Amino acid sequence: MFLRSLVCLVLFGAISAQGAVTFESLLSEMTQLESLAKYPDPPYKTVQFSSTDRRSTAPYAPEWYANSDGFGKE
Image (cartoon, rainbow, N blue to C red; front, side, top):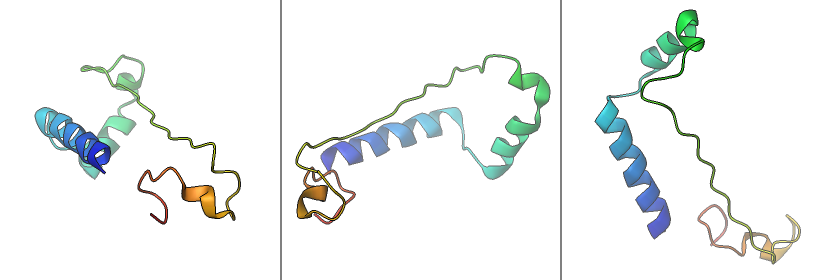
């Protein structure tokens, strides 16, 4: 739970520091073809988080949500 809160704070802080992201701003960015051929400024950072627990063997098994990462039945 603490980790999830920390990630949210970091993400919201980064968004507010660079301005609000709205549907209109995303749509505008996606439709400006000349900007698609250039590197973004400031650069984007892609991040992926994953959690694995070897006790999770099958979706129907009671141990499937054993890692308690906040997305199961804990």
